[in-house]
Amino acid sequence: MAAAAQPAAALSCLVPDPIRSFAEIDAAPEIYRAYVGRFAFDASKLPRSDAAANVSTSPEPIPADFTGHQLGPTGFDTEIETAMILQPSCAGPWCGALVPGKEVLVFARVEEGRLIVDLEPCPGTVQAAPDAAMRERLAACLRGEACAPAE
Image 1 (cartoon, rainbow, N blue to C red):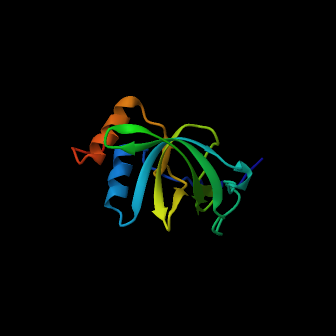
Image 2: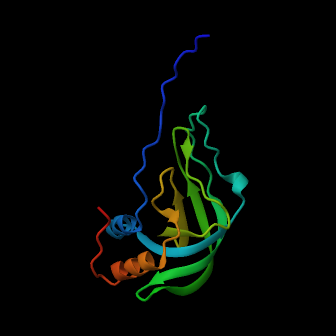
């Protein structure tokens, strides 16, 4: 039996680094806010990553409810419940994803009074929730103290 070899394609992403992401959004012209918490939304509205498909359309925004804590100078100690808009994007067959109810670190863009979360195929604006030490490092970055990503 002979099978034609298919070229393997993979999405190469940097290892998620909350400090690097903080530095990137801090340098961006847009305004961002950082949160740790959980989203409630209709996951069936997320675009499906499919290696057999080449997703070329812009996925629709998804309304979501967020419950968690906002980053301030003293840490993630401001409780918040708010609406956010999830904006998934795709790179070929790979699409941004998020699991409802899973605790995450999120950098939400402020746009016309709304909080927009860009769900990209590679983690960046949405990452696994950081531990206490990383949360303190993020607070230090917000206070303007030393803020260097991991090497």
